[in-house]
Image (cartoon, rainbow, N blue to C red):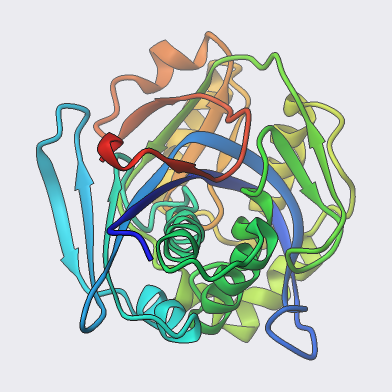
Amino acid sequence: MEEAAVAFCPGHISGYFRPVRGNSLKKTGSTGAGIVISEGVTVLVKPADHTDVEITRVDHQGSVIEQVQNSPPIAYLMETLRVTASVRTRCHLPISAGFGLSAAALTASAMAANHVFALGYTKTECSMFAHEAEILHKTGLGDIAACQGGGIDCRKGPGIDADIVRLTGPFPPLFAVTFGPLPSPGILGSPAAMERVTLAFPGSCPGSIEELLMLSREFAEESGLITPDVRSALDLCDTEGVPASMTMLGNGIFAIGENALPVLSGFRGFFSLQVATGGPRLLEVDSW
């Protein structure tokens, strides 16, 4: 057992998805496509007498923007791994905004705990534990499978062991705007919402990031999930010829191309992003 371990997992923007209910948590998840982003969650895990979790969002200078004590999914994950730990997560992007941060936090927590307690699990097994915690707590369906690698992902089946097709760059500039949280459990736990999502699912993998945006926009329109703020931003993008769609599930949009910068940069919740080139990884402890 070591004194501490640090791990990082990239986030994920889901463009479109279809829920799949299997006969177990491992086989439950989603098919769909999205973008793995280089911004994500860094997690520090230390052995402790009892498990406590602190979630912190900071700016790029390290100043705290928001902080939350406790996370039922991460606490459940530590219990599943049969360890007690002090878990500290850190991110720059807003939480519950469609950036796959719950998946990133769970994945990085599992990897760091596995290392510090010398549990002996593989990276895939760590992701499976994280996936089960996410499904059980309805914080996501397919983000953990997606963020095991980088690029544009298309998940052909549910769960961690499903076939995933990935497109690599170069990619055009990527931008996002968020208008606040859109908690996933309320939507993922609604049978009516999930029925609309299933009917809207395009059923194919994109051949490019441009096609991903096109399929995602069709899905967003047909699913009935677009919020008033998202509608206004999408209308603005349409007027300026900017490919854009809604972040799933988040009260925001993502867009590509140089023309998106002047259109979206005036919004308060604007972010310039990059497509990730890889998945989760352990970091040096002193990087924390």
